[in-house]
Image 1 (cartoon, rainbow, N blue to C red):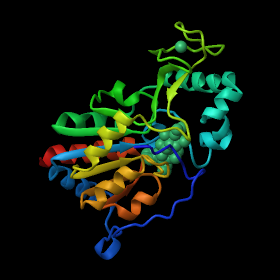
Image 2 (image 1 turned 90 degrees about the horizontal axis):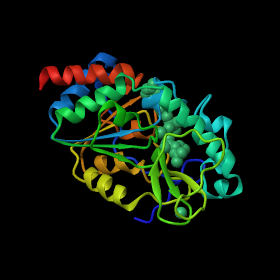
Image 3 (image 1 turned 60 degrees about the vertical axis):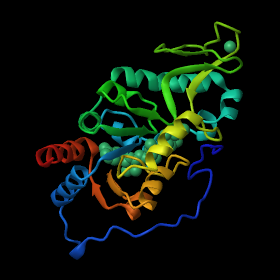
Image 4 (image 1 turned 135 degrees about the vertical axis):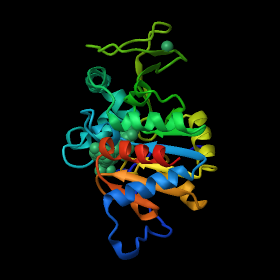
Length: 274
Ligand code: OAD
Ligand code: ZN
């Protein structure tokens, strides 16, 4: 799929939503919503989980948007585009190495562990994450597609050399094979997602009964299509987020709260009833 990464900052999209979440009486409590989410999971064979930076917020990592978000302090054009890298590779590497350092010091939180528990509970499971912070893997998820890459992956800007590195560089690293600059193997704005990842995640969304959407503002495309695909086929959408997002409009149940607090409760109820 030749779709390049684009965000709310880059492209305005007119979106068409299906039916909104309708709660009779509008008086459903958070606990009731958690129970409803658990019941949906108990009635699910094929589960997709879709996460964003919010799931790592309780591990101490800043999210991108909103107050004190990374995009408040850093410019997307400079840090997360191929043009920004060509202009100032040292600044980009410095930023990614700072984030590597945060990840190396941080650890998964109960939200990550609850998602790992869901993978163990469902035979037919896929986690599609926009996060590059590797924490889902550390928490134990293996059936995972990292749509935007991984902060510890590097690739050559000229040849096919790739490697995994946890180094914190003081200068931009060069390719041991051809000498050209190495770059973080992440997806930047304007770049296409890895077609293998797209195939795996999109085909799973096409058959998922339920998608659990956690901690994403759901404004960066094409990733944000995943809940839309599940919803369009009549699948259920469970959202856990501090705020409302475009996904809230299509959610079967949308729960406001911290993923590190809400997800363990959902999983606990799910395990009790399934
Ligand atoms: P955002 O920063 O856009 O959104 C984070 C979301 O998490 C927001 O909707 C918050 O309300 C929510 N949130 C914050 N703390 C939370 C918590 N403790 N529990 C639950 N929800 C919480 O991050 P993403 O949606 O991941 O791409 O952003 C998508 C992409 O845009 C990223 O992959 C990154 C960024 O530009 C690239 O860098 C290529
Ligand atoms: Zn090379």
